[in-house]
Length: 454
Image (cartoon, rainbow, N blue to C red; front, side, top):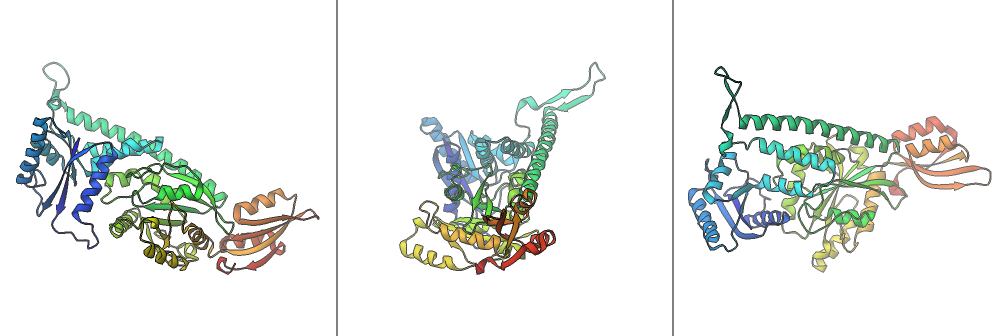
């Protein structure tokens, strides 16, 4: 059993920020995500933080009286209080003493969810790193076993380190070990990306607010079978699958962890290795739940996290990938309005009509499949918009040449002839085209220049 307390500052700087009821509902959803039953909900307005308890003493007593009454009646007695805000170690300790219950702030709650959901070794390492980084600052004098231990022996032995200091040292050693292991994971991912670049398949990364339907869309496009549930943070570990676009271009689609408002900095740092797939992506696809009443505020939160990762999305339209190539921060970007099946028919039809715009949003339903054909065509235009199309004729027995072609271009069509030659219809970026011209010269014939003309 749990009680959820949302702390709402009376003045917010962001005009697009969601209201207190929506933030409370999200906190209740996060609490339910770790199997806790919510038996009480509170919204606490905050004009000025109280150093000792964050919220005022009156609200502390009011909430405490309700908790104690439930505990005495032994009816839905809450064992945990979730405070939807960031608490200092002292504030957490004082609230636990006042309420006689375990207190978790927003960061601790999200860390608990991630701890339960991580399945791969990489995910577990990243969660443990975030947990220990958070826990290290929480080693306050709360328990009696943290008194000072005497060091050395005999009468000359000076005071040893306290149990707190021992715990901090052990945590520090464990953090160092985890960081070394995560560096190994990053090296492995780097080698995997280098291998993919040798067979140049562009990477499309799905990002978005948690529960926006990324995994459902990923499954619909790739038949991957990734867990997709109507809960927050259903997917933590990244998944990648191959996808063939309508024009024949082969890409790799990546499903990533969902973002959330006020994502703990410990998690942003810990999951940087996972989110490197986003950093290295050729195209970023922002999946939004357009049926959610807070969809605009969620968009702001996602863009904020991307900015923290060093990404500034915003370039759209055919050829955007080539236009962004000179700036590591700016990435080609497609915004997908998902869950249109939950909208009123006239609104849904209006959004679908706008799908034909080459630089606008793409409205889809990952459940019904509506709009997915236009989405795949948009992927093709974004990835191959600057590609140059040409044909090439080789000897059918030239295995080395064929292998080179597959490494440096996209093979759209291959035709074997009776004279032991093979005709290839190809596309390649302008940079790769120069390599083709240098290697094959007269064997090439230019067909058309831009994918949009095909």
